[in-house]
Length: 255
Ligand SMILES: [Zn+2]
Image 1 (cartoon, protein in one colour):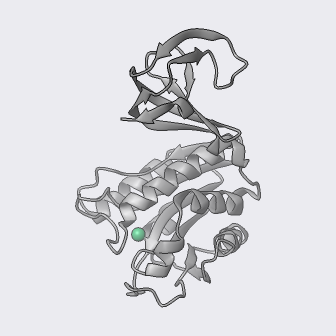
Image 2 (spheres, protein in one colour):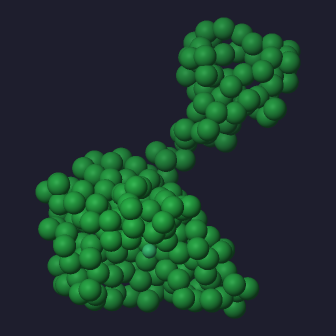
Image 3 (cartoon, helix red, strand yellow):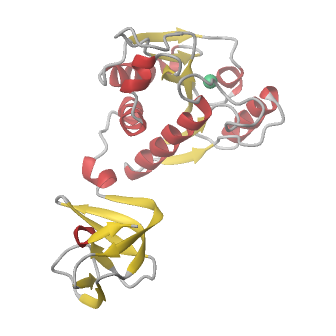
């Protein structure tokens, strides 16, 4: 499929950012959006990110999103949002849940599947809502839908919410395909961090396993920057910023 994906609203801290509840919509919807795009691409789909980060006001955000969407010929436009109105800051043991907004019946099947996949995570399924008044739904050329993932102002929703699971559910709903757990969780780009070697001699390997070539050695007390990690059957490996190779993080401590 060819799919446009965007996070609704401006980024947090700007005008026209989204809901601010127990979590911030514009932050969370961008996390989910990034993962949805990553997973759709992993599955072989063509994806365009139509998020607007520099709208002058709410109307401008919407106009820019729609202009970006309509610049591509796609099968579907997906807009990621979080809902508000639950006002359950403490948690009453029940989520308020997911709903998907559609313009007409064109996206009914996919919208129903997204609701079901998110409901399978434990969220209440509020189902589909037909909305003729929403700018993005009305003016995008391709069939469009808005995912209101869950409620940012319901403590139960927030507790259950996990961006990765949410994104996987949305991708499942759109494509019917599941993202392989290994593909996403084994290797992860991380913000660089420092580790100190805690063993006398540690081998630096060409790859993230003990059978790959030893390229050099590092020594106790040395400090290195890790820029990527890889979970190899429970052993976490870290890639050195220098580009020399990988070390087992079992023999290091975070600085
Ligand atoms: Zn929103």
